[in-house]
Length: 116
Image 1 (cartoon, rainbow, N blue to C red):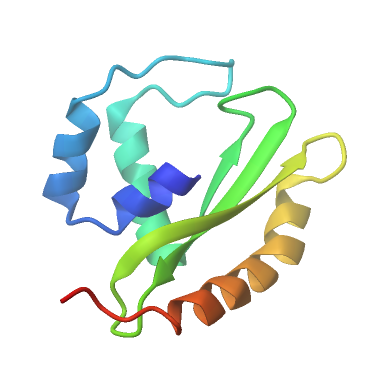
Image 2 (image 1 turned 135 degrees about the vertical axis):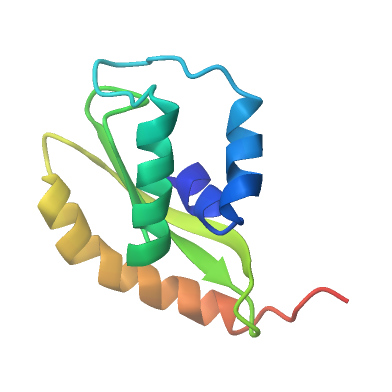
């Protein structure tokens, strides 16, 4: 989820170039290995302002991430929360964790000056 948020902050061409440097390997049966689908996920992350990884790296692990933007709105980092899939559904992860995560990322970002 962190990588998706960071890639979604880049211009689409730059994100595609970065993606082309990596072999897409299925770590679980849920791993997205289609470049086209990943590009769609990046568009969703740009639009929604967050990304979810639902058991794509490890069965039983769900994660949600948001961008951390500095005081001028540039994405400089990402912040995430992970949970056991057996304890929290994807919907619960979004509904309960996203507002808290966004607030924490905003508090952090408000303390970050833009690079000189």
